[in-house]
Length: 120
Image (tube, rainbow, N blue to C red; front, side, top):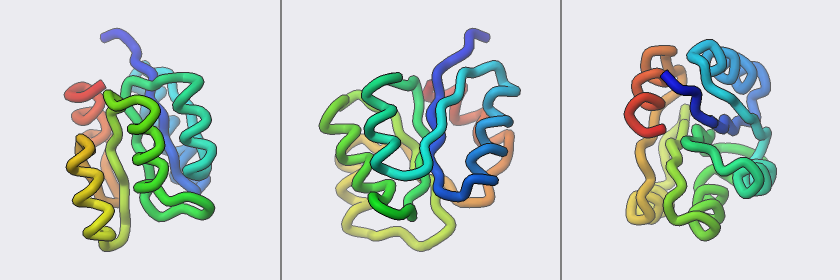
């Protein structure tokens, strides 16, 4: 297995670090961001193979960050993460822009591993 570049975006720093730790344990390079603004800036620099991004964050939510990333890179592979009900209008727009999937918190190591092997 060759390591991929994975970006994880979440304002919950404990969850962010735990998720990054799990993905590094799978042999991948991981970059993290704490909000949508940081995610968009880092995406442009590192061009990850796959991005896991929380929806509900301060400054810029995951949907708006997804829209900006897709403007920059229409081929970006993004999976959104949520613990809440989704904004249906934004979700439909994201699906129309090739959002890969949405997963719910809490998610398992196995879920991350399956998604990375399938999409990264």
